[in-house]
Image (cartoon, rainbow, N blue to C red; front, side, top):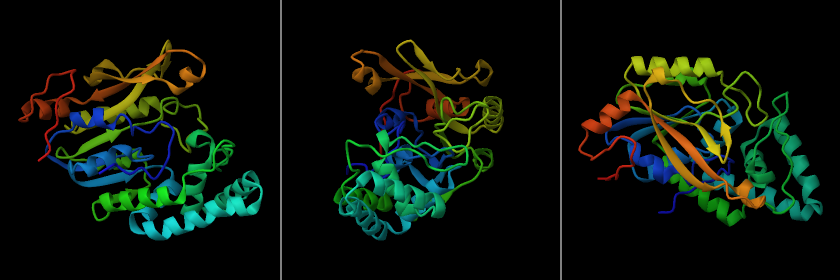
Length: 302
């Protein structure tokens, strides 16, 4: 089946998922995403049945509320989304309607309003103000995902995840403490967000030193994890590399020409970094797969 992606999110690992999954061990009890966002990796793993169960966590409570609604009530959510989507045309001024929906969402946090905003905002790029309110503008070039397409995406995601996923809105450190050596943790923290400086794309940042300490503790407990962290586009780098004392293996994934470079007529290629933990490398090397460190391996699904 084509993997459903009901939540459009800038920076999603949707396109890179087929190149990340080959680094998953065969015997995953639970796949944990502490910074889930659009949960692209969880959806891709669930479609291939790579884990017995899944945890989707994000500090953004509204986002987790939306995920819970997608999983539990996809049909009802699809109907509500369609009503909101169609009303932008009935309103006569789609931009004014978007602004009204945004104001309503900031007051109520209702999941159907959030879904519409995500599907309709500029470049599917979330922005928040200092008060934690959604403040991204409407995309003037398009009107958002068509209702029929959204319904298909919602129902498909619910089918993959229902009765197999737990949705949480906890601090990522609390979620990491629940991991066991039989689990796999996939982390995609924000590049610039991993600093003390607030980034308007995220409700909460993650301190770099705290994040490194969390990874150190995972190593001490022999937890398998993968981190999508720093990267580069042309000469521009995103975030500092993770320190050598963690003994992580770096795999560079060539993601092709960046969309921004294309718009500017340049050929800058985006390279994203994938870090594999020591415990994960041991699991992969001990498995029946032929795994060469630093090289993608072929994943066999039973």
